[in-house]
Image (tube, rainbow, N blue to C red; front, side):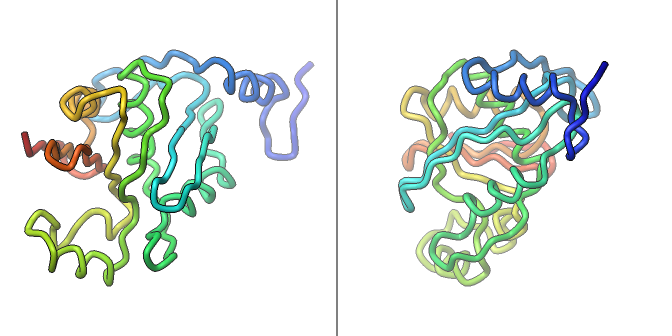
Length: 189
């Protein structure tokens, strides 16, 4: 007998999600059309923001389905902290971030440097640096700049590149890695 919750998840699936706060399922990543497949029954994202002081430890996918409320919280967390503008973050980017994090073997959360960027913020950053793209994927909610104390930029970039699912930029002098769900490509050293 299977009990269904109001959201359509099985009781077993929900219990598994709560258990995942202690143990993260070990995902496997197949080379399937350049994207992630078979990421286990649960996907979880752990981050903190040095800009806002906020933390997130969110299970956002269970038994093959994204959890809309969780994605909404991730969208808010990854907002443009300068303007407080929120944009839907592409779930493919979230999956790439999660897959790369799992491949690092670290339990440390990411530090979010930049998620969504409003046009105003992107223009301001472009005026300060030649390394900011005019048509940045941050503007579309398709990119994140991330840091981990326990992993080098090269280690984090290698994990993201192993996903073969988007763009990976190494910004060694600034100590972060850019991940996005655009075409597979890499840059930086």
